Length: 96
Image (tube, rainbow, N blue to C red; front, side, top):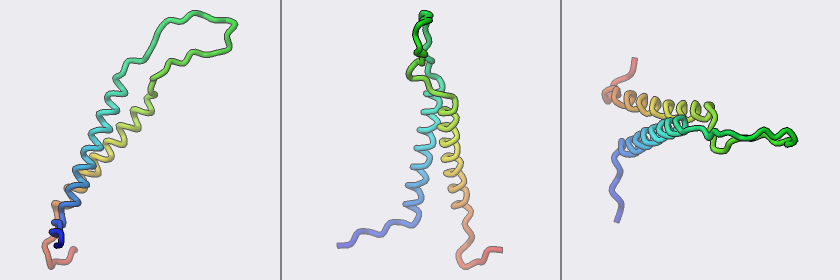
């Protein structure tokens, strides 16, 4: 028995939904990372210590910018793909 043939637009729709979901997830992650409080606190002066205190769990603004840019690019690509698929020429006609 053979499997039924998939509709031509079904795989494109799945890819489009996946792009939107991943784009929104990246934007949500960027918002979450950007709004986390930085671990700050008071620490004593240690003149004989050669170590520098670096708090853990701090994300740089660059990380937030990269996540936001990637999410925006994915959403923009999905929107462009959806608009491009909507304006298809009629069958049998040549584009100008």
